[in-house]
Image: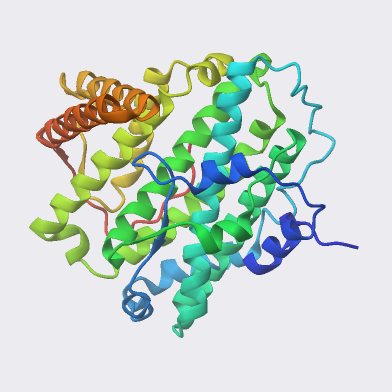
Amino acid sequence: MNMHSSTAATAEEAIAAQEALPPLTNEEATQVAMSNTLLTPRFYTTDFDEMDAIDVSSVREEWDVLIGQMKADPNKGHFKKNEDWDDVDWDGMEPALKAEFIDFLISSCTAEFSGCVLYKEMKRRGSNKDITELFQLMARDEARHAGFINDALREAGIAVNLGFLTQAKKYTYFRPKFIYYATYLSEKIGYARYITIFRHLEENPEMRFHPIFKWFREWCNDEFSHGEAFALLLKTDPKLTESRMNKMWIKFFLTAVFSTMWVRDHQRPEFHKALGVDPKWYGQEVFRKTSEITKQVFPMTLDIDHPRWVPTLNRMEAANVQIAAGRKQGGVSGWVKRMAGSAKAGFAFVSLLTIPVEKNAVPASPRLEPAY
């Protein structure tokens, strides 16, 4: 009997389970996953020796509890279709919604698999038991998520070639501390995104146009646990959150992650309309949840109620529309339009960085449990 990715004990087993499925080639889906822009998920590499040298002694008690929870594997077998998986009329789905939803699934699959690749490589290269054990567990979870999304895509007649992505997608080098900031925020904002959609559809089940949303609660709990691990890693070195330069980097990454989400979500108006969600409300709600959570380790949050916040995000979104139009137009005039849009986006981002932050005290212990 073939193993399913949902019950795989390691990332390698989950990937092998996907590769053992009947071949289903869709070059367009894989090319979308392969693309590298400011808005698309990236594959990262880093200084693995520096990460392997992390000493978790200062957070040992919380660390052992978290690792124990992850090893207990409460979501084993969850990311698999069952009797709650409704039939999906892909052919009858409104074309614009279908295109945006498929783009959402491909982007989500790529983001999940990006984490899997990074974590798996850390486990392979490292010798520090604490660190390699953590990354093996997180790689397992991310591989299950990516496999589950690919299962959903296969119903639409497409799939992302995960093995090809590993070999062919461009990798971006990030220093370890940048990996900590970016990945911590990615996991925590992922939790906030998934739980906000899940709770909304609990109250409005008639808006649930695809069964995958029923799996979002357990999914977001995995994201939350991964974020907890990075919160503890950040706690192992106080300079990562207390030095003046690193506080500037924290503000930069908060602004980059929030603004990227805002722009990307506004690219999918039909998707959010089908869910019955206003992208502006959704963005601010997710930012609010994420900001509250990040107080566990970051000494500041962004002022998302500042009068310049939303208007400047809208300027970034308009600039992105101009960039996309220029890319589609091509030629010299298209290049000029794209460069003008890039300049506008850059100025808007700098404007966001000039908004004063809201400072907060950081608790001695960062550990949190999902509460939304």
